[in-house]
Length: 470
Image 1 (cartoon, helix red, strand yellow):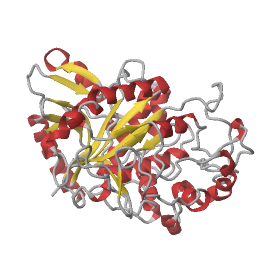
Image 2 (image 1 turned 120 degrees about the vertical axis):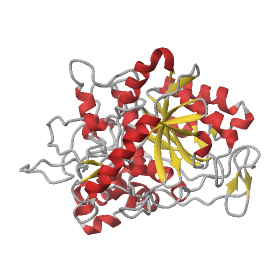
Image 3 (image 1 turned 45 degrees about the vertical axis):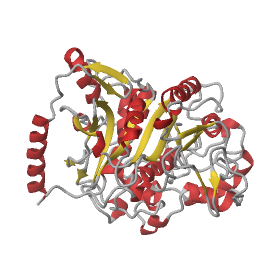
């Protein structure tokens, strides 16, 4: 049956490639903050698209959780899109936006390490195994379809366990980006390894490091120092992955927001957008005219077998055909915008662009950008004095070490530990609303004339499960 589906997929892809050739037009093409002219820059444009990491459905990998599915075809498309937007952030950080794949001299070591993080193995930090397992803490069973917001939350939590990168992941809430919270987050030491030695917060403790076969170590007992010992201080600005989940319409996208989405693709910090249309999730990387350009994860390939320390054949991880397009008006209203800011100056520049291109134009306000943490919101971060409690509880949240145990499907997420055991309970005072908000008995909402409706879990907004090709 799989062979029949694969043959059918190949025919569909070949026909789609024939239809998807870029139009001969003088209109500019924008790809993740870079502008191209099709008539003069077509080869450079295609090289740019080809250099993005492309994650698709895979089959024949080790079963998720030991007894779960061995393929994500039909349900993992939004997870694959989440992998793509995170991989783009890591490429921008480690190699720069202008890096191109396939140049003479081979690929740099940083590229190899980034790709290794996404392989379909249970011990890879951002594998489909880890994402599906972490999604259980978000209320999603393994094999269930995800929405943009749920994937953003999963990426945020998995980044805490990344032993190589100290990426700060911020997921906005209620259509609001809080500058104060982002700067605090990026100036904190990396919490991914839950290590404190280099920052003077006490003794280092257990991590989720993987263990090589034959090693005398046990999962979680390996301790190392700060991930960037060459830097002056662990408190320096950490690179930021900013994800803004939005609902830009009710049942269909509101056309008034299409121009704002285009403006976001023009920003040099742009990582694109998670979204799609009913039953399908795509990773949008740019636009031309009234069409959005995207990478499509709906191609089933065999999992790449690899061993640690051995280079993998990476050709199946790059889309080497013309990128696909769809009408912007066909977009499902549940989306998530992504941005990468390498340093504080880059973030300040992004804030300036948002004010200039989106917030000052009243009909383009998809989200709000505020200076201070709203008083009616719960606290966002751990204080140093609270880290000791987290040390005691951290052993409960090691997805890598318990992937083969059925009870791992019920492990506590970092966020639940933080909220349940560490942070104080917060009572919402309806008399104190942030600027531009009006309070009801149970929540604060913005006037409908200013921004889109209050953001809800976008995991329920796109229509049911992705379907395998018929």
